[in-house]
Amino acid sequence: MADAPAGYKAAVLGAGSWGTAFAKVLADAGTDVTMWARRDEVAKAISTTHENAHYLPGITLPQRITATNDHRAALDGANIVALAVPSQTLRANLEDFKDAIGSDATLLSLAKGIESGTLLRMSQVIHQVTGADPARIAVLSGPNLAREIAVEQPAATVIACTDSARAIAVQKACATGYLRPYTNSDVIGCEIGGACKNVIALACGIASGMGLGDNSISSILTRGLAEIIRLGVALGAKPATLSGLAGVGDLVATCTSPLSRNRTFGHVLGRGGSMDAAQEANHGQVAEGVKSCTSVRALAESYDVDMPLTQMVHAICHEGLSVPDAVGKLLGRRIKPE
Image 1 (spheres, rainbow, N blue to C red):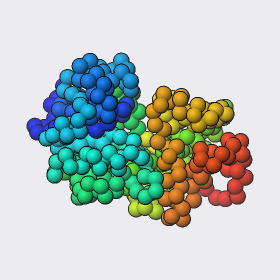
Image 2: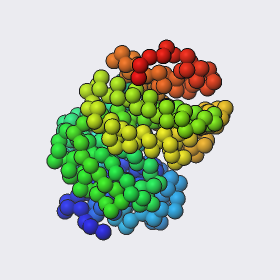
Image 3: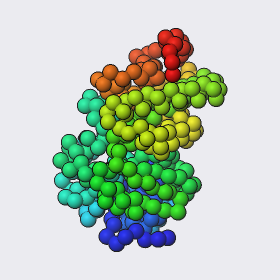
């Protein structure tokens, strides 16, 4: 195991499946890691058994990882702060964390979503709450299914930051033999790709649950990508970002994998299951797209961007529209050039 450059210390705030998997990546890259877990029993289990049995059972965590439910202890001396809490709780958690974050620490968002109400991207929430210079804020995106990475299947990801030196520093801190991180300066593109793919994955899951085949799934995925690119470009993203790992790569993984919480949630709805049943199918873990579909839809409307798949997902999840009626509405739209 190669050590990261001297002086790297990371705090991972959040002990869900992706936070735990990313902590393992950092440790395997030679970075010392302290995790913060909301529940003391989870923190103690990680430190003593080197396993997060609730979220990543069967995965042995490196000795470099320790855990605590005291955020100040986790943040002490950390020059990389990975924020791995759900997107809709990021603001509240940051209000608790902000006073203990080092004045020059790089803040790395692992959350993928658009905040309800404010319609802010996660990097914007971080800036607003902490006052950190946007150049200190980075985002991680890509095809990052937690269990596959935790078992060290080869994958790639993107570290986006407007400060290239910080992006490279994070890249070095998480580069392993199984995860290859690339750098990018397009924070907006990476965040829009990461937030919107969860919504399209719900649509693909719904289609799968209905028993629809590969033609249908491919059509949803492709038209979903068109929606994502339209919104991203309207916000200032680069189209090339959304055709890369943080766009197409993340979209394909989330829309097609049975490990995807959003696809799983949609699959239950497509079979005729309730919202509660879909939540139970994910063992209580968050399917970010369920809440993000509302904020993504509102954001698109504010920029006059047409996102029919997103609108239908929102209507199914929050307005009681039946799945068959949603499909009928989509197929009944005016035909036009691609």
